[in-house]
Each structure stands twice: as structure tokens, then as C-alpha cells.
Image: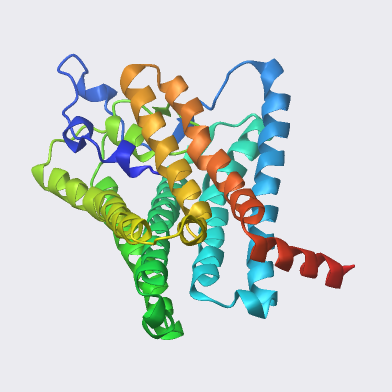
Amino acid sequence: MPIYLIHFSNPLFFFKRCPSHIEQQNLTSVSEFFLTGLSDDPELQPLLFGLFLSMYLVTVLGNLLIILAVSCDSHLHTPMYFFLSNLSLADIGFTSTTIPKMIVGIQTQSRAISYVGCLTQMSFFMLFGCLDSLLLAVMAYDRFVAICHPLHYMVIMNPRFCGLLVLASVFISLLVSQMHNSIVLQLTYFKDVEISHFFCDPSQLLNLACSDTSTNNIVMYFVGAISGFLPISGIFFSYYKIVSSILRVPSAGGKYKAFSTCGSHLSVVCLFYGTGLGVYLSSAVSRSPRKGAVASVVYTVVTPMLNPFIYSLRNRDIKRAMRRLFSNTI
């Protein structure tokens, strides 16, 4: 998920010329790539298949339950839960971009992915990853308005404005995704066709390219700023204001009540960016691409799977809506 720390941390590293010892005939204009996956051990393949299939089903089911609970319960038709349902939808899309292809690859023993398929996967990966980050920033702003301007909350966070915030997040994510794709489409030659990952990881693909274009570097810095730096800055600013406002509350009970409304969101933010930072640091310390791929499982699979549990276990309204949903179904 916080992919931006990884993919945009050093664009100059990605766009480099091929070493001089690689002869011109070895540079390949490819029609497909090969994903190395997480392990080559045949005995581990059934275990990986079962593990990732179950995690994927839990992720999709958990996030769908959040969306259904918010949609069916009129008490949850508020800005906070509107943004939460959109975050759950983005999590489903984010996980569905990578895991089904890996599951099918394990089952069919095929590691090949077409050039067009790789670009498509990478495009949706960037789209939903960026959308996750922007929606978390929007939810932080929602909590800021609720705590710092409670009397004007319903006026500021009206349905039209909330819809515009989500549409703007989708539009910016599409822009980031297409800007990234425009860079990749300019790459004609690659020094290898093997990607050391279980999906078309943008950093891995760009690292295989033979290119040295200053324009691409500028675009990558711009994309990284939009999809990573700006949302993180917005979240930090919102919580700075929230903490400052809570500290002015005289009673301890009032402070706890005010901060409890941010608990679930803050947990998801820490999980989202914490795992991304952990993957970034592990890839910087370890030179093994396979270890980086294993670490990436945390933010591509585990984080989207845990988000529904964090919100349902820490939120009384969601738990109440879930009980109503199950009782009406039964």
C-alpha cells in the first residue's frame, strides 16, 4: 500500500543506462515478462496457493461486509462512513490487482505475463494504491473538521462536498496512474525479462529498463509528491490540529471521547504507512529482490485484510450495523 515511499524514493536510480558490458543484441524489446513469485520450491506451492486464496477471500468478504453495513444502515449515512465504504472498495480493487494473478500462476505453474497485461496490472496497482492514500488523507480531514469545528461539521461536510472529495481523489489517482504509464510506454528496451516479484512491481520494471531521460525523472518526482508526500502532509497537519484541540479539553473523559473517534483511522494510517516504510527499509538494507517481494505481501495483502477488522472491532456503530445486517439476513 504506501508504495510511494518505495517506487518514488529515488527516480534517478530507476532510469539508468544499461551497463556497457551488455551488448546491444541482448537488449530485448519484449512481448511478455516472467514473474519469479515468492518461492521456487514445488512443495511450498500448495501452501502458498491455499494461504493467499484464503487471505484474498477474507479481504474481499470483510470489505464487502463494511460496504453492505454502511449502505443498509441509515445511522451510518454520515461522511465518515461514506469515506470508509469507499476505502473498502479501494482495498478490494488494490488486492484484486495482484493476488488473483498470483493464485492463477501458482495453480497453472505459469509465471508469464504479457507486456500489455503487465502495464494493465501496474496501472491499476498505482490507481488503487494512490486512491487508498488520498482517501486516508480525506478521512483525516473529516476527523479534523469533526473535532476542531463540531458546530459547523454538517455544513462543511455536506453530501455534495464529500462526493467531490471522493471524485477528486479518483481523478488524481487516475492522473497519477496514467502519468506513470506514459513513462513506461516510452521504454522500448529492457536488459532482462524476469521481474523478481509476484506482480509487475513498478520499481522492478523500471529498474530493468535501459533509459536515461531527465524528463522522466521530473515526472516521477511530481507523481511521488502527489501520491505520497501531499497525503502524508495532510494527515500530519490534520492530526496536529486534532491533538492541539483535544489537549485544550479540560476533562479526561472529554479527551478520551474526542480521541476515540480517531482511533480506528489512526490505526489504519499507522498500518498503511508503517508497513510501507518497513518494506522500504528492508529493501534498502537487503539486496535480495525476493526478500523485498516477501515483505511487499504485508502492504498488498495483509493491510487490506486487516482494515475491516480494525474498523469493526474498534467501532460500536459498525458492530451494531453488522448485527442488524446478519439478523435481517437470517
